[in-house]
Length: 136
Image (cartoon, rainbow, N blue to C red; front, side):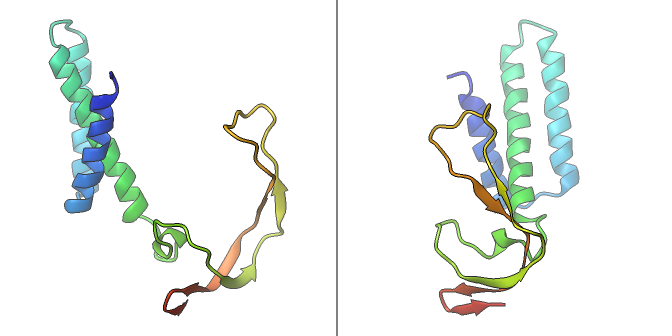
């Protein structure tokens, strides 16, 4: 279970940023402090706990950054702000901006199950049908 403290740090970072949104300066400061502490502790074999604490600090900062980017620094018109966590079928209206292109999985990319080719295009969305009607 060597990655358990790192995983718990990531979870703690997401929970922390959800409860108390931190300024980007504070996030960078915690990450740099943890990295500096880790580098200094790695030079001495006797400070394994300090190295572990540094790894947890860096993973907490990474969790905060991941959550902040996902929730606070997306543009207002991003699709992630419209859809919920639970997948649902939605009807979107809009104008196709780029020509649709079929993208196949590279042959050297390993996957857990076979995937079909995907169609990719940019859509300028005008409305999304929500539970209570269209969302402009």
